[in-house]
Length: 72
Image 1 (cartoon, rainbow, N blue to C red):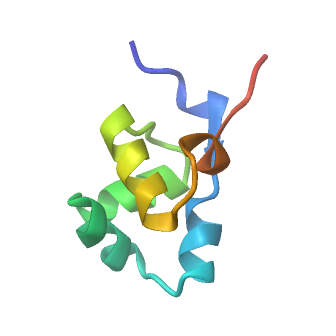
Image 2 (image 1 turned 30 degrees about the vertical axis):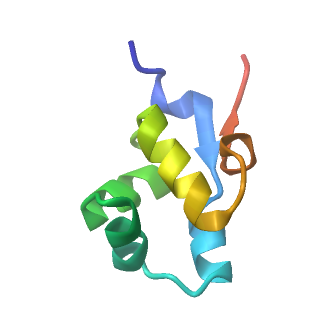
């Protein structure tokens, strides 16, 4: 069962800007639609483990450095 979207934040938008990538650039690199990146950045969608891994690989970071789980 997926986590409610408000329990996880991410640094994708910040990292994209730091690497001069558009949403479309990142989407192509991880083989998803641009809209998926939009939803991730707005915290309206939690990625699959594979997508989280692929995004982490693009930025050469760990999943935990990109996706921040907020405990209640």
